[in-house]
Image (cartoon, rainbow, N blue to C red; front, side):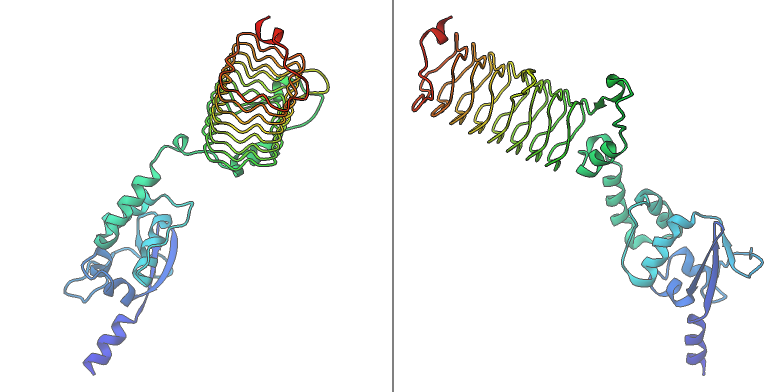
Length: 321
C-alpha cells in the first residue's frame, strides 16, 4: 500500500505559474531527472520540501521567473533533450538552469551561449538577408536615384549564394564577397571598388558599366561574363587583381584594365576590342582567339603570353604608343 501511495504521489499533476504563464506538469518530471535541483526540492516529500508559499486564483504555484526561458528547462526535465527555439537566447536559459540548479545541462548551455554571443556583424550576410533588402526597396522612378541606392559597403557576404539576383546599381565598396556564388547575377553599374571577390563563381554574370577599381578577383570564375554596355558606359577595372582568374569567352569591349594584374589568366576567345590594357601584367596570360582590335597594350607585360589564333593581328604599335 505504501509503495502504491508513493507511486501515486510522484504522478500527481502540478500547476505552475511562471511569470504569469501557466505550466502543467507531473510531479515525477520535477523529481526524477534532477533530484537535487530546486524544482525537485520544491515538490519532494514534506520533510525536504521548499514548496512556493504563493498560489494564484487557480491554485497554481507562483514562481517569479521568465516563462520564455523556463519552457526549455521543463522540456529537458520531461525528455532529457535540450531543445531551444531559434528566437530564444541560450544565455537566458543558462541563467534559469543556474537558478534552478539543473547542473547537467549547464556545460552545454554555456557552449551555446558563447556561440550565440558572437557579434552579429561578424557573421556573413546570407541570400535571405540580401533578398529581404531587395524586396523592401522601392523601384519608383519618381524618387531621386541617390535616395534609391542600396549600400552594402563594407559588409561581409563571404560565401553567400547571390546567383541570378538583380544587383544593379548597388554599392559593394570594400565588401567581402570572397567565395560568393554570383553565377548569372546582374551586377551592372554596381560599385565594387576594393571589394574582395576572390574565388567567386561569376560565370555568365552581367557586369555592364561596373566600377571595380583595385578589386580583388584572384582565382575568380568569370567565364562568359558580359562587361559591354551598348549605351556606351565602360566597365572600369583599373588596378584590379585577376591573377589566375578564368575570363574565357567574356565580352569586354572597351573595358579599362589599366595596370591590372592578369598573370596566368585564361582570356581565350574574349572580345577585347578597344580595351585599355596599358601597363597591365599579362605574363603567361592565354589570349588565344581573342579580339584585341584597337586595344591599348602600351607598357603591358606580355612575357610568355599566348597570342595564337587572334581574330585580328596584334600590331606592335598597340604595345608602344
